[in-house]
Length: 163
Image (cartoon, rainbow, N blue to C red; front, side, top):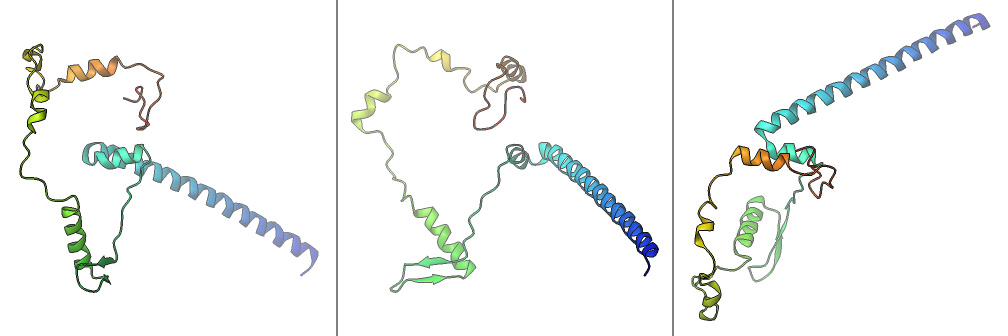
């Protein structure tokens, strides 16, 4: 290989390298556009079909799950660890259904508390008449349009301007 052949080969390799670099950049940009389009369409579809996933996406929240792959069984003479999925589901379900105790049958108010729960004479009962009426769209829109701007979003990260 002489010096002329070496320079020609080096130039061709540099052109190929530059071409491959630009092709890679183009493919990456195209992939990013496709991803943005896909997830934008998914979020729009979720607005109608899956509001929970849409809100989790907007608020950057992840679903956290607990995977039970073993459980300590203590209801027999000698405790043991079970990895049988049916046992795990049965025991975990039983635990969560009974861990708070059995609700009492007698839910009556103790006599000492009865005066505190008695109706008050000085309260006009007619103020509660419309309490369970459905809220009208016009009432929602009126409240939302009167919310102040430039306020902190709070834990939801949704600002009044976004609403």
